[in-house]
Image (tube, rainbow, N blue to C red; front, side, top):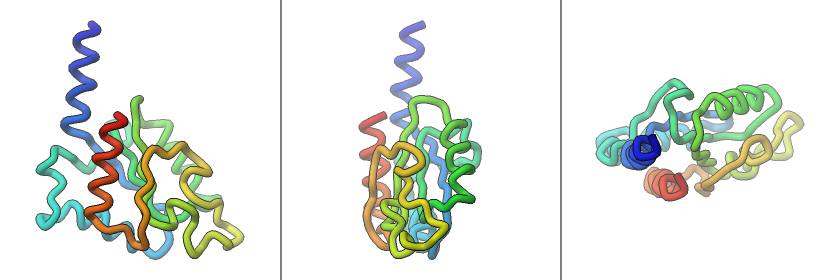
Length: 141
């Protein structure tokens, strides 16, 4: 039984499934995350697959500022993901709230709501940096 768990854990690092959640803002980082899926960057060659169900995801990519309305959704997505899970906060808005941090409805960065494992700075973050952030998260998985 222990051998099976070890095997499954090793395979999760070789073929991670990720879930992308956009909390809002300008969608610049959202577009860059989607650019990672295009043939130019082709993250699928590393075995990374974008899924829509949090129950199948190993990595949660979060872009945009967290506000009071979407923090409940973000917490629900995080709680639905199986353990072990990695959270990657992308862009200035995901890290600190960005230029929107002083708005009345903004909670702040992703780490104000859920624990974050990897931070990818930038406004917007480049696809290469996002891929590096996912790989850094895999080393923690």
